Image 1: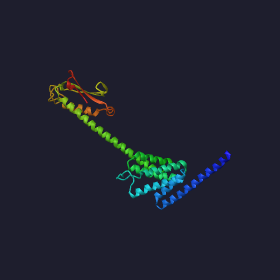
Image 2: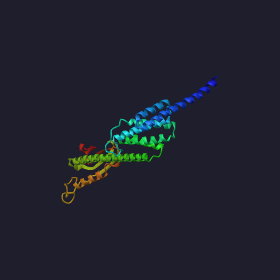
Image 3: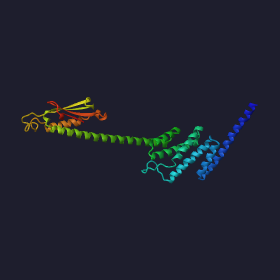
Image 4: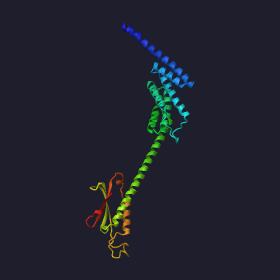
Length: 300
């Protein structure tokens, strides 16, 4: 008896599923008719009823997704939206969620029937349009994900072109950031050079200038830890006839020629590339023939 009862129940279950599928398709047909008449809200209601009866009705999922997609495109047309070339970025649209809902319907349909051609075609169109909207709104990475999803479905020229455009924008942005960084670094270097010049001017005017024999530049994280050391020797004129035949300055002075040489050596060689890109600090020391005085050491 149990076996006989099971045989009766099994055909009944198959019959019920077939009846549900047929009834769901009736609602799908009605919904398509409503869509053609321009009644998208009523059409979507019919598709919802179909899916309530048969949740695995692929045609109902595709039709509802198509209705949502068309509703998005119709509203965008009414708002006179343009593509990502526009100079006026539109605000986030209230019906953006329709794109997400349509995409979800097509995803579910393709999960049930991977080779459903209408589902694939509508999915591609939805993702292309959605990616364009995201790109206009500045959500570049999300737009990139939509284009990449299209290419997973089929080789689509518009998706490839969209990705190429996004990549070019990214390259331009990176180049702009690099240029701004270089400009800021150059400005900082000029400021540091001017600080060193001011320090050297004060040194050349100091009372101990006749004792200076060397300028030493050290690069490191602290005065006790250097990675590079550069030395610039300084010649002090000791000629008796310096005002006439030698350097043109008084005896025991650093001549103007020598000062220019120091500045030339300084700013042709410093700071080295290693110090620029590793955030090393520069320390300036003055080596004199006498014992060090407070003016002999300056940190930068």
